[in-house]
Image (cartoon, rainbow, N blue to C red; front, side):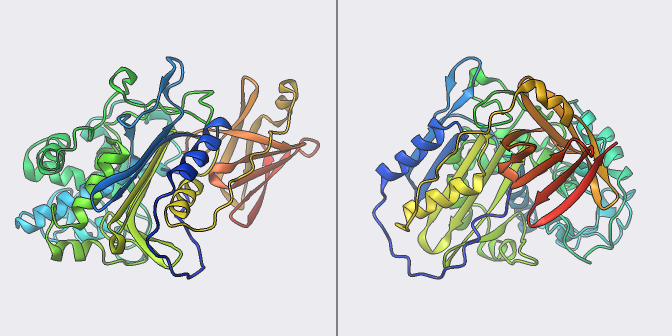
Length: 438
């Protein structure tokens, strides 16, 4: 859930009329991305509840040479939060819960539990520390956790601010929401998901995930778009309702279409869910595309990244999920929507990577830190590649672009090393930080 850039920030305001779908151009775009090994994944576009375009590129399992297809199932990360929010709204409609219900009614040991409400949890305004930001998170995220052990880890993080003071993304809040759902229903979250959402909507490829099995058409995830190395595999006992769901882009489009056409919650509940505060509702946020706005969510877990959006004015749902990326998911979505709406779009020119002798990578290896930067960056070598890992985050490949300069394009991150000074300048989002090797 780390490197997803908020989607599609385009400032132009233009008239966008309905266009005939240029499938040939879409196919040519995805051919280009696949040929250059920039991304692996699947796209689905729905119009009026019907699929009008689907394309899969790359592999679900590189080692077994299994190509991705329309039925390939991916971990969807934080898009799971929308499902969790829907179940919460259903419980509210059944008067089993209230938005002002206090966390203390279920989990009184948390700091400020008597002031934190269900609405605070839904809107990421609880003030609870996000447990996936813990420096120790990567040391245990691949191990099965029972409820007691995970509660203990979340409690240890404490509180970052008073409830309602501001927004701060917190997976802790959505894990607690899924626990509260289980406490009310007296069932596991996966069973509740099935009975309340996937069975009624006939979403046969959407369920609570487990150990990935590529022989069941479940995609493995990778550190880059070529599938050169497997990513970590988080045990799905960890993210719960914050990120444990598996699905296909087609199923996700069915889900969002159903949500916005009154098949899951009432009109008043949907209005509550889509009322934005600091650009976040209940398991939903908005993003612009030219003068249009979509409502949806994105996600990231291990090597997976995902984005779903629903354009209500056009009855259009679009989802892309990747299991290996060397090029930002945001770029894929912008391209697909630009082509769909008939906007001018120039195909990217992918440049050949700068060649670096693997024997020369050792001089970059080390742990880099700075008093002005909140995380330590550990740089390692894996085969012929350089890798980096920030405290509490997953490792990622660094692509050489010039002498001593590497990038992680998916996050818009550049690292410029100075081996003589044992230092590195990290650039991202317009900011620059100088870190020194410890």
